[in-house]
Length: 138
Image (cartoon, rainbow, N blue to C red; front, top):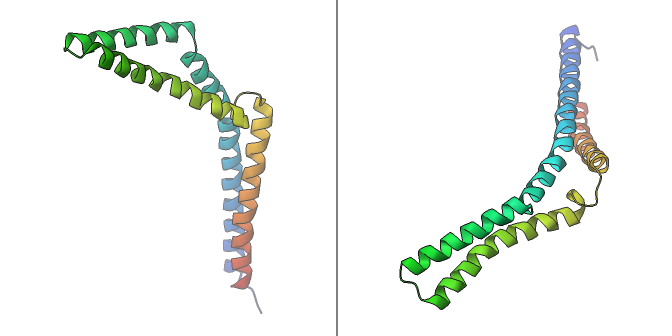
């Protein structure tokens, strides 16, 4: 079977484009894998900071005050304020649990980056392995 030069050039161009895409994706994901842990750590520290606690207390007090001024019975106002505060604590618990699963707390940024990189390589191998098989079949 004779291979046309145009087909060969087109195949080389596809391969070059694929490699460029892979390199670009690696670069982007490398940055993301370094930035996401820092971002999550920042969110956690802002939720559990002294200042955040003060703001939460003020917000809860204002919420309770509004309920009472609106004529809400004491027991109901307290219960609703507790539920209001639980939204903040549930968010904090969620963030802590994310950390416990190795995404933030106890995992080093380098480990996270390596794990992300490994997963990316696996996915790329799966994807481009499939495409190569399809091209071979054509």
